[in-house]
Amino acid sequence: MIARATGSSVRSLQRANCLQDINQIYAGQTILVPRQPLAPQPLPPLTPGSGLAAEGCTSPTTQITNLTPGQLMNGVFSVRGTASATNFEYYKIEVRPDYASVFNFLMRSETPVENGLLATIDPAIFGRGLHWIKLTVISDVNLTPCVIPVIFP
Image (cartoon, rainbow, N blue to C red; front, top):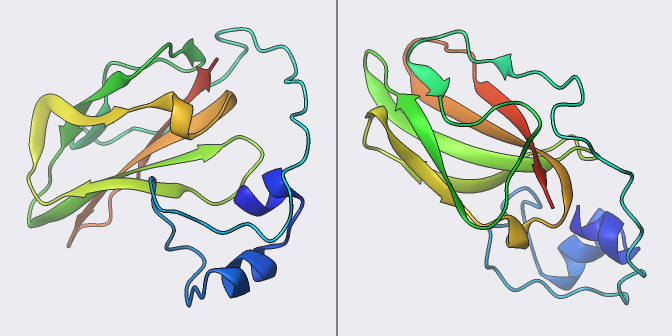
């Protein structure tokens, strides 16, 4: 996402920042960009709903309950739901823009949640457009993640 937005390459960003694993970039981390950012491109019009659907979200132990597919998220918002399982280890929340194939790590917790607050997200750190929010529960049972598409204006 950073490489694409700045007209750089993933390899250039990795070298410029001495990163052994390019997938280990976290929100708030300072990243050196070896090229100037490109001019912002206008977003295609997005209509809340737009035929979008949640992915996964079939396990009662891995649920995001307060977001609906295509929902317009104005300002900082809470992600609520359930993240628990037999032999629960932890859960994590990740976010990716629609044009990317890799999710960006947002947070992790070793405390299970039953119908409560999972995370708080500030859309300003991700940019405008369609984004996918992913809840993954890690345990000794293989659970399907819950992924919800929302729009950051």
